[in-house]
Length: 116
Image (cartoon, rainbow, N blue to C red; front, side, top):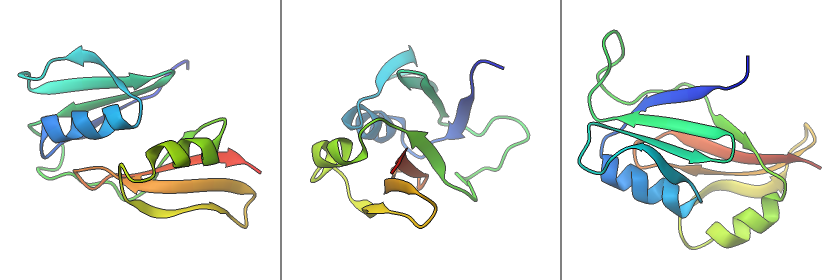
C-alpha cells in the first residue's frame, strides 16, 4: 500500500475548497464548477463530492477523527489561529502527542498531531 485517499461528501464544495486552502491544501483535481474536488497537501489527499456516491449515506457522516501528522504542530496552529476555530489545543495529550483540531464546513473533524 502506498497511498490513502479519503472520499467524502461535502455540503458546499466552494466552502470546503476555501477552508482547506486556508490549511495549505491545493486543488489537484476537479474544478470549482465540478461535482467533485480533490485537494492535496504533500501526501495527504482528500476528495469531496457534492452528491453522495452510490451506497453511501446521503448526509456527511464520520464517526471518528481524521488525523494528519505534521512536523510542527505549534507552528501550524499559530498560522491557522484566527482563520478557523479550534476544537481543542494545541495541547499535549496523555498518549504522547501534541495536537489541535478543527472542524471543516461539512462537520468533519481534523486533528493535526506530532509526537512530543
